[in-house]
Length: 170
Image (cartoon, rainbow, N blue to C red; front, side):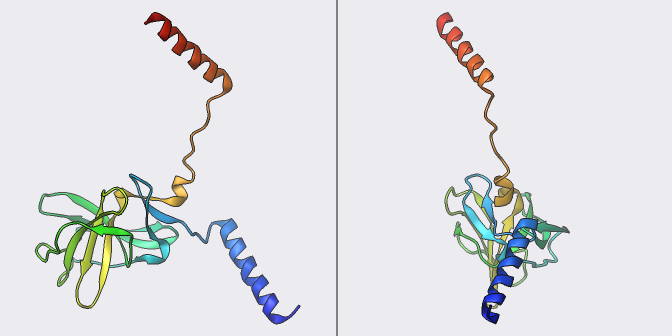
């Protein structure tokens, strides 16, 4: 076996073991309302703002992420994580008033598929990123565990009989 084949086999085994143990994930963050893929683990970044009135660490898709809590002038409260890219649409015009990040403009962003508010796009001449409302997202890994268990055949027959009885009564 030549060295190149050995290296490829070694890489394959490492990836395989990481997938089996759950330490390597390819899952996305999805819109909680329609399931559209919003962003990936590799896009998650940590951005801190002095305007946040609370923050804590949370592991999201295997990435240690800072969650920050913000209030707007309405006042509504949002828990945000940040990414350097997301599949979202802009909603409205860029604003500089009441920004949570000094020197940056912001625009609301909605899901590309269902138009649910997902977060904000923050931009300055030096950098840009997206703040994502964690309450409006769900992990693809978690969604894959949500299954509807079929009813036992006995229950299906019983339900069918009940429907027939209701029809007879009408």
